[in-house]
Image 1 (cartoon, rainbow, N blue to C red):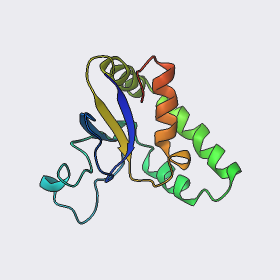
Image 2 (cartoon, helix red, strand yellow):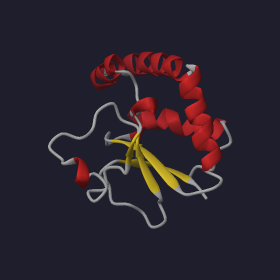
Image 3 (tube, helix red, strand yellow):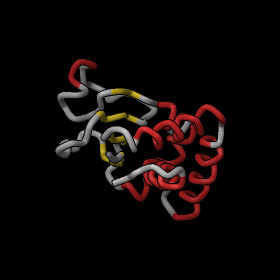
Image 4 (tube, helix red, strand yellow):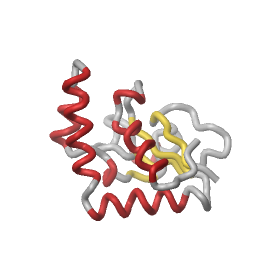
Length: 128
């Protein structure tokens, strides 16, 4: 069993399991009923998305210094007790079932999902 880190909207891989959208907002111009069929996500879980202010900051991060500032602030948000428990839950579930989490960003290295990957690994998740 594993948890995969994916780009929402990318074709699903075989055995990917439940796709969880860790994004602040649902996709624009797509009917809610079509999210799963269009490989966006099955369940929306904004709990693991940066706050709206941090999303804007990440999108404007044009250099390494501003990206690192975003990362520090997002890690601080993820230390909240509820969010920390959410990460623990996903890490534990990764040993029981296949699932994936993702975001819309094209480049994972400049996306919060790269940080989620690291945190899940630190918690003992089986990450592919």
